[in-house]
Image (cartoon, rainbow, N blue to C red; front, side, top):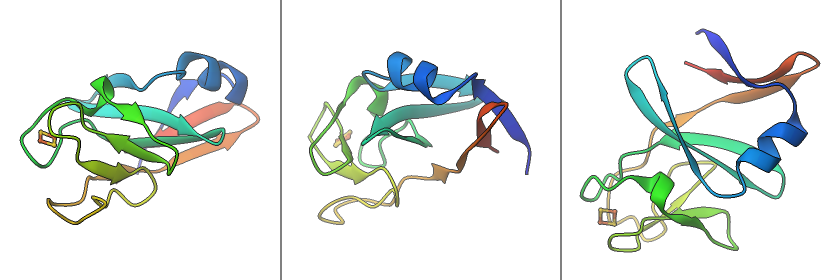
Length: 104
Ligand code: FES
């Protein structure tokens, strides 16, 4: 697995991710989001009908809510709240003194 730097530090990440953001890396579209100051990375394409999840919102449970039909995906596990569609692929995020990294 390669670790790719995406932010210089946690503060920068939290500021930039006040709403979910799209990251395109190595041909993959990834939705970056924060919840309770933790940083998460999941596939951007909704497993229901393909909408871009970075256009959605994060709810009080730490789920990204798809803007099209409002399916809810847990940012930690990728699981849809009512298991109406497949889980999202989740990417590991790691922090050290050099910055914030995503594992691909
Ligand atoms: S496309 Fe996301 S819930 Fe339907």
